[in-house]
Length: 194
Image (cartoon, rainbow, N blue to C red; front, side, top):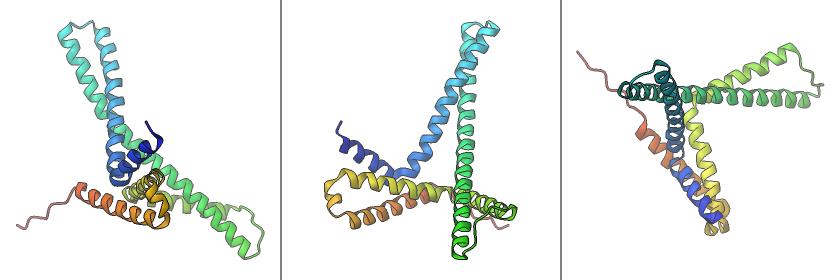
């Protein structure tokens, strides 16, 4: 397969459905992993109990289904942990950079004191909370940007008009993904008056 065709396919998927692909894909990976692990556990459990073929199949199926549910829950927890970690690290980097820039502007030598370290850690914690709060928006912006980059790299027409084609395609991608995100977002029912 041609390199540009692969970039075009990946770019189109990420550009116009990136958040949905990421959301569904992570759950499918978790369910698949949990299904396999649950089946293996069920097989070993059924062999250890020396079950007949009928109950053995039911035990394997039950363990596989429980494993799939556990896999989805595990991948959700893992996604949250990774998002918190990356947000915290980004905030710590941003806080340290801010302190160094302030020290340079104030013409003071930079030395890490306990107060400055606490300030940097607090900026990291705030950034982690913000990343968790804006998880869907971050996923939409990142997948739209990467998808637009792939599409612009794969199509010569977009490369010739690069700054404007990139900006227009990015804006279109952000609009489509945020619209799809709103459609998939569960709506709270209106409170019933008594």
